[in-house]
Length: 257
Length: 213
Image (cartoon, rainbow over all chains, first blue to last red; front, side):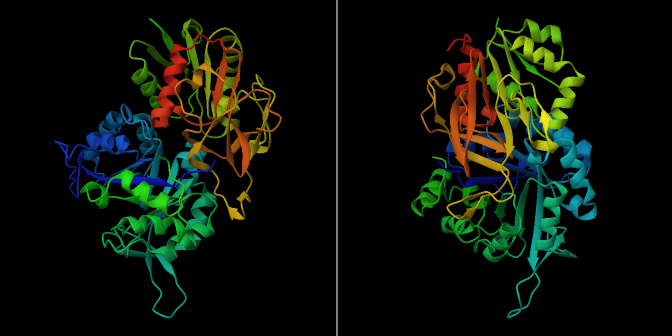
């Protein structure tokens, strides 16, 4: 009996449609997040992460409505992130059917918001998203910093110290994205993943850079991640969730069949 | 028409539990309510719960839910979920110690900050899909394979050792009660409404259960 490492497909959603494209072989309307989530659920995904990438006021109602439809037919945990700034945002997402919400930029500008959210709703539903970038030079001791605005703006915050602080504030889980690796398909930043995972008691989801199944396995065995998140290798039909699980299992990783 | 009442005392995402029960039992009316009369009239009752036990118990006391739970858990199928299971125990060590409803004698304990397995450190909360060993035969386990995985998310647990009411066991650094049962009461530490096939089967079994073992 052992806890399984989780595989989490991530949907980037803009105005109610999955973007970056999704190309399942036998799905007619690949842009509908509910249909995509349903397919991943059928494949045995362990969770779904839904990121509202525009998170404008106008798109917000669409997000609540989409989350509501998703929660009515996909019975695995659902994390929703993107533009979560207030306690009211969190309440609305949870009421719509999200199980966890992911806080990113708002945590950087106001760390107390994480504490407030965890006290109000419980740490189990508060995920803090950490976007980190390596700032050390070759040959120096490795160091990563928190960046905002899709990796464009440095904050001066050390990633490891920041991760510890967020957990102290009440984060129940960390969604860690390497801004150096995001979209590169060369694999997770394993040094970063390991450093953060070792530094905190809560589960860490590794994200950013997955291009093949070995990268998912490495995230767990070398990065010490509790869950691995990927988008494009699943969206484009390059690999299915069962293929990913079989691959990881063959390397001795505990997975849910 | 059958009715399932999900007790709403302001804690957590009740939408998921409602949708999951509606999904497995389309002919059932599912109410999310704090209305004592409606809860008394329901054929079956679910006590959910997430977050901190102190806040949950405080709200349950404030809304009269504690006495109501004692009443309706006597004579109809009753299901506790997650903190809704912990609330049925005698006491929790969370938040410096909180007295609970006490339908079961167990105490609820913290995993601790130094949980290990074979020398490896385990993360807390226990979050994700873990296997459940069915320790008794029970109608709620019908059509669920032994050792199937359910979704857990919790930092506190009811002990397995010496637990005479245990219906299912799981292991995470320590053995813990994944489910307890007595007479018409069943309670689970995991989230059946988030546990895909296995969880939906358990909820379907609950909607068909007469309350007898």
